[in-house]
Length: 140
Image (cartoon, rainbow, N blue to C red; front, side, top):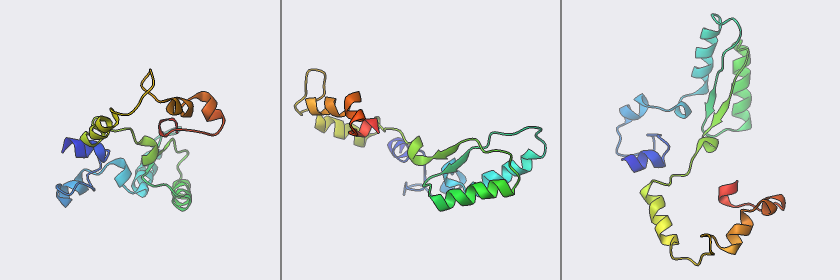
């Protein structure tokens, strides 16, 4: 269960063994509709003299949703929004998940240079490679 929670970034919706009522009770910020955040911020704002830091969360941002979200915040009278958090930007490498461990174990036998990387990998991850438009998955 712990590996599944890490793999799905704490999102319970994709874990089949968890009952639906538990999934609904323990939604993450990315699972809650942005309208609820805006509505709550709008209700608080009338008691705040200057401004509040309102974070907005979207799992899969697209231009239409972003447009609706920021217009809704403006219509509700929010003075500002702070950060837009997206799931892709918040996603981290899952080095402790057993699936990742298996993949690392399979990679151990490959031909490596003196510092653990092949010459091709070193070139792909160098600053010069980035300047020339090349990049590796870790440098994105």
